[in-house]
Amino acid sequence: MKIIAIGRNYIDHAKEFNNPLPKEPIFFMMPETALLRKNQPFFYPDFSTDIHYEVEVVIKINRLGKNIATEFAHRYYSEIGLGIDFTARDLQKNCKEKGLPWEIAKSFDGAAPISNFLPLEKIGDINNINFRLELNGNIVQQGNTKDMIFPVDQLIAHVSKFTTLKIGDLLFTGTPAGVGPVKIGDRLTAYIENEKMLDFIIK
Ligand code: ZN
Image: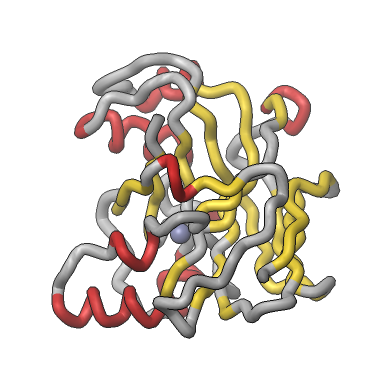
């Protein structure tokens, strides 16, 4: 399986970094070894001193597809979850300045904690889902999927133009504003509506 992650998909987050709004979705890949399941602790890596959290709605692909049309994209998923797209902001800044790929800042082991998945029918409209992240009990990120620049179905159409989607692939759909650093000892909890999806510590 593969993990596809979308960058800059919420206006307020793109503005945080003074990034121009994208004209089409930006995506990058993470390897399976980036996943962290079952609320296992995240071990702060020694190659960075500026790891940031980014909470994101994650779509699980349930059918094989290529060149999927936007109007049929909803047939390719039925479950959603939450993930954290941990980012070594110091390494990413360095890569960006040099015009290099971001992989070392995004794709390292454990960079993508992932929740269990909920059936979408239980939650409702994919384009109106509230989610939030708490750091040590304080809300730091709050989003609603209606604020995506490119809605989920457009993301699937775009990504599948370039890469075949397979059963079990995960699509991280971008983060809203409020990203920030973590430190050892912090606890992250994340919710879809009022359902607790993630609860783990930084070690
Ligand atoms: Zn992200």
